Image (tube, rainbow, N blue to C red; front, side, top):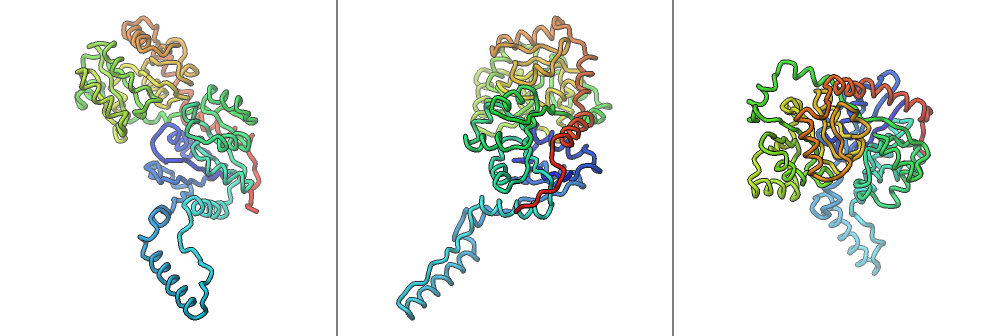
Length: 405
């Protein structure tokens, strides 16, 4: 089966790391992949060699800055001279032909049509709901497409009404990353909805075998006498990072919280300043640590999730694979993952209740069983879950190449 994959940013967010796991572990004898992202982000450097990578051309410069490109300027000048000469000779202006470059949207559509003809995929595989232009093009050209949906209601606000309707009604297959996502797809009228949980390549633990928690804490300047909670994800409202200052105060001095989120917006600036304003010193916002990310995970005694909405966070699986107990709001797929003995999922959205859940875990009142946490994580290893993904694709997708008419 030949699959042309589309993903919006090619970054290190959970949805795109899940896609990378599929590309790495899917059976190369059964599946052949093409890969396209309009952003050519950092994930493109991680793509396996056997994947056909189609880089996005840089259409923006000519399209967005008409008149600054020398070729465009000379073409306009030639056209102007030609038109005036014709007027002097005939008394009439010729029909004006625009020399402006085509809009970016038209150029990228032409390019993707060319990519399709070159790669000849059986199906387009569109990662997240944030690629409505691609689904629209697939619909127009009668190309079968699947959408892997890692998104809930908040992300739907980023998609136009008509685009969302087109995705749900025209997709040949809708893949939800958790049951809570599949439910949303069925409510919207999705006909072929299947479940494929997110997964993590658990081989990362091999990197940590020779590092002790005490050594890691000393290296990164984290107190060795504190109960350390770690949280990870974008510093944005959906992730509930604005609750961090109050949570840190409620948790008290015996706790240190590490947030592995990148501060890139005014929202993040506000949170940094609030921590300073109230002299809250038991929080470290370290930013995203790509090189030693898993070493930072080793610093923790527990994992806390403040998200208001989170379908099935990969970091939750990563934390569990290290045996960390979980404290979280009931924000989505976390309740599908956390079983008795693994932590506490709070049914309310009250910070006080989350802080109380953390206290119960720290004081040994939550009945935490580390072996159960580790065993649960194994079920979401990339190799095991990719095998499940392969079965879904074979059972649900077309097997004959589709040509653009």
